[in-house]
Amino acid sequence: MAYGIETKCIHLENKETTCDKSGAISFPIYQTATFAHPGVGNSTGYDYSRLQNPTREQLEKIVAALENGVDALAFSSGMAAISALMELFHPGDHLIVDADLYGGTVRLFDNISEKNGIEVTTIDCAAENVKKYIRDNTRAIYIETPTNPMMNVIDIKKMSEIAKKRGILLIVDNTFLSPYFQNPLDLGADIVVHSGTKYLGGHNDTLSGFLVTSRDDIAEKLRFIIKTTGAGLAPFDSWLILRGIKTLGIRMEKAQENAFKIVHWLEQQKEVKRVLYPGLQTHPGYEIMKKQSRGFGAMVTFEVASKEFAQNILKNVRLIQFAESLGGVETLITYPITQTHADVPKELLEKNGINERVLRLSVGIESANDLISEFERVFKEANELSVDLHINSVV
Image (tube, rainbow, N blue to C red; front, side, top):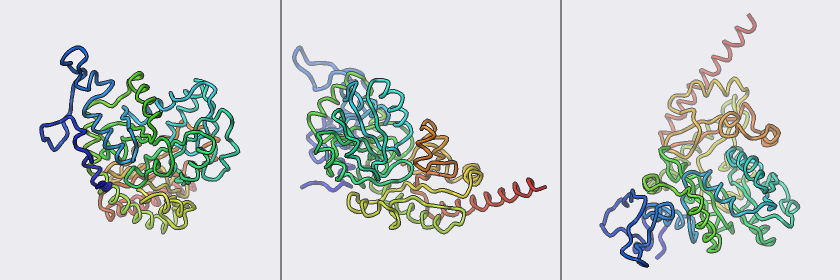
């Protein structure tokens, strides 16, 4: 009998795949760099932790099961995973990438990938006709859905049909929804990317990244790349992510529940000019989300009336913390234009609608009433500060 996703977060379906025979409920941390061999030509299955380590292997099997992939590879960070992914491509290859991506991914494509001879065309994959940008040397389409931070929704199945017809890869960053709410491989993607630092880890205490694939040939290439470039996740960090995944389901459900309540509160505030959340029926991607996902997640982007109001919010939050990252148990608020997207070219920021009034919220699992009370206090203080500044400027 196949396990449900809540159970997969905690248990491997085939327990015989684990090397641990002690009966430990918490999988052990194999804190070793190398492994002894019984003799020439004999091996325990492990040689050197850069190649594989039992703790990392356990984590990779859990993540592969959650994404319904044939293999998952755990890296030292999300960017390490994407950097390794780009080693699949050669100088002269062409990629189509969505315009609204995490700023670190944009920085990698603009400054490292293009320097290495990979051509990148940036378009709005949610709105534009992707087919007309495909060339003879196009090798992949790279998307996030929902996008970061503007919460655009891209039809994964439709994108997969386009990619398969031309024999190119579809790569989907699934960080925002996690495998609990969305499985891009089931919709035809070839490779799924995760910043495991976020929802998979869930506690803002370690970095990690993942590549998951549905294809044995790609898995083989990625295994060669990870052992050659050496960015595999360390045993202790692997254990932290394993521990975090055990509560992935309940965290995602609670964070989403809180997100809906905060979104409805934000919609009622005169200082808020727009709220971007794909769980709203007014969101243009709502119907696609209902079709391809099991939930809407806990990431919310909203735009306020002025730069000063946005910065006053950031200055006065206490329970909600002004910090980069997302997906942890704590609610974090981020200023994309100076933080996550600081290295994105100005013209692309403007095209995507990322300005000094836009804030990104990663909703945690605190009491929703406490989070809303925090916003009520902060909005009140921001308004009072704005009034004082206006009076002083007139005087």
